[in-house]
Length: 251
Image (cartoon, rainbow, N blue to C red):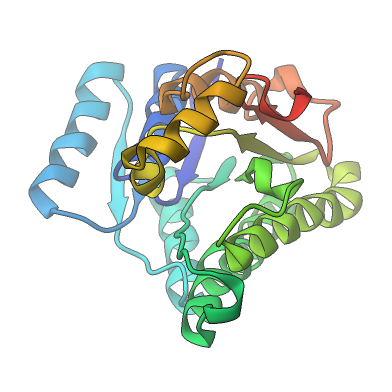
């Protein structure tokens, strides 16, 4: 389905990003994985993608808060693979504190990583896709907090809400050029970012009791949505935020 395509997936050394990178590779896409972590573990994952799916995979340590490094990553991907066909904006962080006590430093860090970097990445990758003249796919990882306010996460909620609007703004301009810009809004997933919630017995129970599916989601369950939005199957889908939340928002 994606054979011969090149996908850049940010924040993909673990969790949701890695699950999506593997899902795209399973459909034939060469991948650029990105993020921080133990170098030997990252290399193991990168090599595993290549051997398991018979594709090429490279690693970029680019810092998503540094526009110059973002530009270099996209340029390197184009030089390595000949084109950039897919961008998945997944890199993100979360900082929790009551709104009255939320620090300016936490606000700036979350906004820079979760929203500003998405603007820079989408702009640089979109420019590359426009120059290539054959369309492309940009998918950002939003959240159910693109629609809700959350508790103790004002910067995260603001960033994810803004990300949904960035998705629509880019889609409005680039749909005519065959560049599909969409987003996936995961519900409560078992990732490092949600460890604190899952370790809080009362909060964990309250969350699971509200999810119609009756459980937390697994990052691998986002793979199908990502493949759909990154393939020709979504050729007429523009500016959409696709919920993968176990029914959370429908309740």
